[in-house]
Image (cartoon, rainbow, N blue to C red; front, side, top):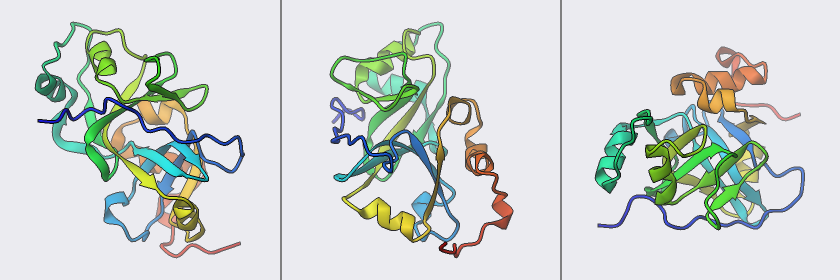
Length: 202
């Protein structure tokens, strides 16, 4: 049976252009038309002219906890490990695991450093380190990811499918998953009750 955790990481060409959304968050607008992303918040791990890749951070996978995954992988739990949710990271490669974490941890040649605050690792090694208490200070495990081809995300943004905002540790790691969508909107000063499914264009 194939391992549900990726042993390699997706590499995207990083471009130093300010309009790319690496390290930002996407906030789904009402009426975007895809129920998989309804009221979703996605942390953007990579974005360039070649496409984009992100992890949904507010939809826990049903009936699956981190301790359950460790048991499936035959990884022992250390005394300092705290059990947490496992999240549905997106519809692509949903049998593989991706860990979004603080930038204080790195696996050589396997960790994608997103910015000064966040990184993403997709190896079994990080799960072992989290289990024994030597992993990153904060981490969020996702199964699968959200991916876009060249120009696809830009098109969805132009069609008012998403809002964008800065990411921060408090929202991602310190807020209940059920409150992250409204919390992200709140950082933009938006009351979700006032959102229309048909956004205007300036």
